[in-house]
Image (cartoon, rainbow, N blue to C red; front, side, top):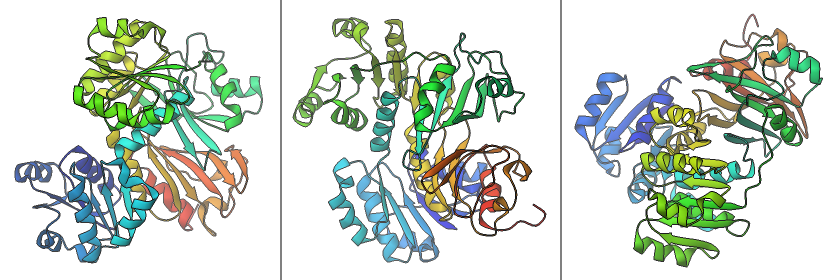
Length: 452
């Protein structure tokens, strides 16, 4: 595909780096010449200095040949205008990042579609809903719903006294019998790997597990997780992410929201009905003590400062809060934060990239997601007639190294992927892959490959 990316920050460059491995022709448009020179020196990406909402600049980028125009600047007005101009000048598909949540209403999205924008995306809105999913499954570090909830993928940390500790996955299967979940990725220390039957489960392992909804409780029990109830929440940061969480959960839970900006606190009191708004700095330990941090079931830090979010979550942990969630924008901080004891990390960059990259893939990929905790990807792929994957049982398929099949959706039925199971035409197959493996894996589902 020919792709034009307009961006003035890390989201745009992260997208470009992710897409370049899929053999797309990518042009980055950015007004900062020095930044683009640095990009050119480290990558093979084409760059163009200029404002993306300029007709002249878009024509220079050959927008008339573009299959996809992505505008992810911090300024939503520029993004909207770039996407509209891109479509008018011949681009097939356009995507714009927006900051105003009202733009995501069904009525407003229809208006923008008529103007030529195919997708409006708000990383803040998606981040807020990811936090909500984590609150609904508090024992998990990450939660991904696939095929309208037919499958879930949980990231859990194996506890020291978990029943599976010290056993191989083969021994676990033999002891417990057929299970409606399967471990698909392990992260141990600095190493990420796909497990085999001989993999020994160790305390502290981070394990991604695909499961049917009805088996989630059994999964948590085997991982050594205690049942948690979330009733009292403290949110730090009243920006768009914090507002989405509070608005959605305030009717179900007791919420206190701490915000440093006094004027923004006044705005929040008009937007939220049952949330207690507190003006103050959550880095002040005396303040969070006075507001009853020791009585909180969950602590969520979603300010615009990653360091503040990490620090305040660590303070909350010391006061015994069961579930801590931090918004962390620096990818290098994610693993460090988890190792320090923060329960869950949300990253807007990865969230935005997952949603946008789906549009650069074939229609046979119905779901795509970057895992936050490790460097791996999840996809749901439709098996085509005559493709390699429908010709043999799973155990006989030549699946690329670094990929694993986790589950299959066949109409209303779901199956955990086992060796003797054979994929059928039209099945939606959940696959997990390490970086760079997905393009080769996709070919197995879309066309017949000689010799497989």
